[in-house]
Image (cartoon, rainbow over all chains, first blue to last red; front, side, top):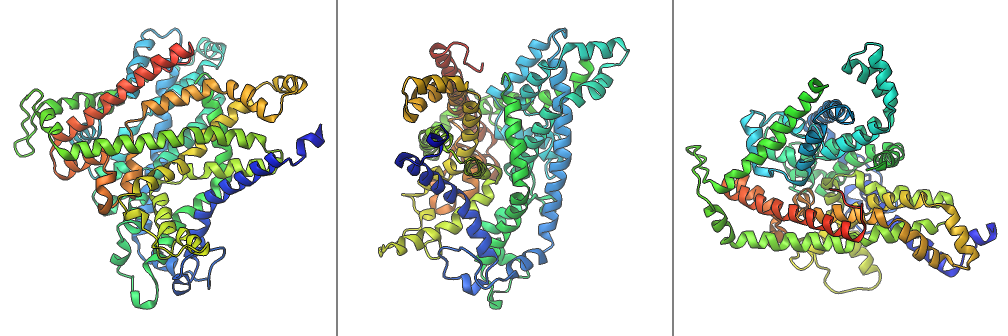
Length: 289
Length: 289
């Protein structure tokens, strides 16, 4: 049996070759940009395939970080991701737990109201006008408050709460604990898998999101990392950096790849850990989901 | 309990239902100068459908999202079946980890990667073509009206494919192993096992992802297009979302942009309801509504 399992038949060799190709096509772009960013500008000029840095140099990164703007952008993104994710979790829990209670009257109607928002949204402009009306334009809270609860995540969490035994909640009630206390002291501790999963979904969303920032934020001092990156990578913002001096032999290409590198390398470092929990989270979500 | 639901309900009222009321701007003529918005019936829609730009965006929207669907939907199914055939656990883990990586990277960064790799002067694709002896002119796919949509679709499949692959793999992992043992006794080869056991077993998961995907067909990827397109390819890559953005927030014609957005969400709503209905006919109990 073990022989059969590991024998390399021609079709199996083909599958291995094919998936190796898929893996290379997925990884190489990241590798390429990082190696390019670590190369000397002039040596990298010819382009082509990069397996290692050519004449290692950190000039691109030095220039990137010489401008304080990148740190401002990092700070804003960290604020939105941190505060946003925390509030996301609190609000999602506050909605999901009562809706998982069979004895709560009217919970079906409320669930339906929330479900309807998954099927139909007001759209870009009506939402923009609301954000404008409540005075959130050019405010970092505009990236947090309009997306406080993702209905899909809310239902994932409610489905998880269904699987928590009712007796837990009942005994807390009999002991005289109020609903909020029951939630915090009893329910949250037994729900860490789903909370961790949703924290990751929300956190990654905030870290990568940029369309709302484009729509709602115009003040450069409040702009988030992704929008800053876009201005550097796509709109050729490199030339506008005061520190950029083409005569130093540094090409725009090098600064661009350094920008991408600065955004990608931290993610690559935490990725192995991240993906393990992410996959677990997907499984939690698929319970009844 | 009801008190707990209060903050979430305020959120849904303010940022989900208030914008829904805002779609009435599509039936009113909003003036940004006076702030007045008299009802005009279908006049705004009549004007919208008379604009060539709207139909260009609609056409691109359909082509891009259909392309992403037709090419993107089967890929994860095939990949998960192939990965399931791998017998070296470490290689299997490696491939799984790799294909999920792009899902964690923002479109801004991926746009940057694509631009770097496809550059006709220094890109990798150009270098490989030259390496195999191609001497003709290498087109810049990113400014080519013939090729840009292909770049969008391929990069979409590249980024999004891993996520569904992981979901299918989780479904495959939960298949009862005795089914395979029985099949082996009946003389079924690997191919027959994949076709007769694995695929039918993950059918419910395929159907659920299919419903979500078809329901999202009107969404051609605002973040992706916004991160990757440039003025030279607007005519082939302007989609409804970017059109709404330009008409609404650049030209400040709120009514017209709201009408375009409403048009889009209504088609999306019909798509969800219809696919859900079909899914329940084909496989009772599989719908999401």
